[in-house]
Image 1 (spheres, rainbow, N blue to C red):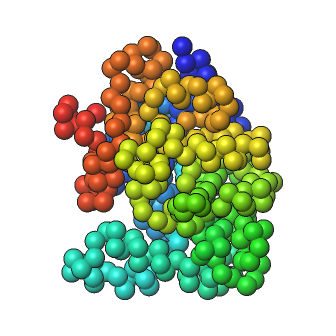
Image 2: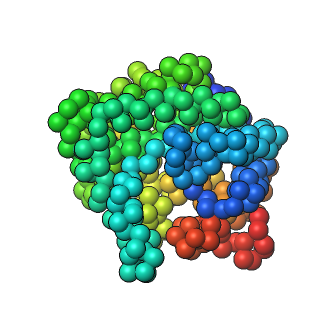
Length: 371
């Protein structure tokens, strides 16, 4: 059973032992717990872990590729993960949050006049002017940082890099945010330029390294996501990204809205079903022969196997499910599906833990102790 799910795949030049990936996730845990959590997921049998939000520059949230401490932490993680036959991907991340907007909002946050959702809303509102007015010299500098970060990621043991196509790449891509009148704004081709040049900068610095691209898709009717690429512009963006050097695509919903849209609970009015973001893969599939990774509420091995076998996606990425049960791959492959801890998509201790600064956890941990 699960012949497709358990089969190896050439994922953009990188051989994966099966089709299960850990999706990029901000875990919000202390360093030792962070390494232990990801090693535990690697030990459970998934093929690759994508480490979320690895800063491309010298400043930014999260361990830095530019400091000895940060590099040592990433190298330690790579050793621990590789020991279980699991590969490691760095999601290269450039924030589109305007520091001035953050500092302006901090007094209200500290005075408890706004909560984390309120801060997020204010920062999202500031994205458009920030992107629209960014000097070209600054843009060019950030693009080159993507290439430098890829070099450093490879040096500490990452097997692949993923260019984060939401955040700054996605904001430049979006006509809702990007109102520039120069070569980085206006037409879809121009709005794709920042992302395309970021991928090309990585390809130039690490010619033989696979490059995954997190392709954030904006949905209309009903509207979800404000950054990213509308479905109507995918035929422009996908070939340009492929020509720049993207070897695979991780397809999901665009951000800059409610976190409960991009991390939807089972009660979500439009994304409550299993495989909720796979329709976006269906839109991308005719545009490229590169491997596609699907994501979004994937928990059911029978359904995932059927979708993989049908070619709707080539790999399945999970976050909440592998947090709920790191042994999901090994249990499925060994016929122990009756013992799975199925993610119920309640968002209580995963998204809830992150929003309340407890770190990402799962309701199952309360019942049985940390997994």
